Length: 105
Image (cartoon, rainbow, N blue to C red; front, side, top):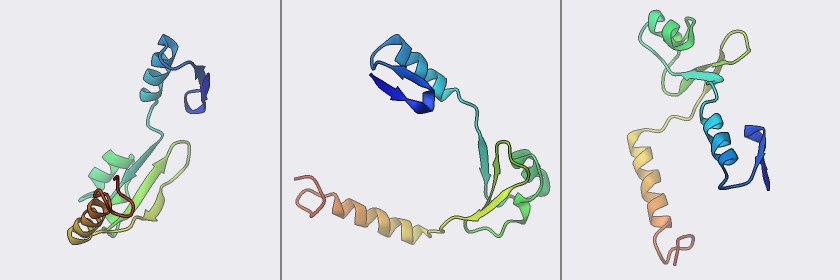
């Protein structure tokens, strides 16, 4: 039997108890909200329940509202342009081709 700590349940796979544990896990309320730059203070209040997201710099600058914490946490996520994303997808795709060093054979 496996113990699924995130669900606080120890349940056998394929049992009704496991199915109930999986449903409970999906119904867990959101514990945090992440928001990127928005157009107005009103939109920020809708998203974060407080102003601030309208003052973000853009290009990956974000505000997070964490459950049980006062205020917002600010962070910088990496910014990738469309060209960067295309190059990354191409590299990953080529790396996964049969016969490549890391791909399936």
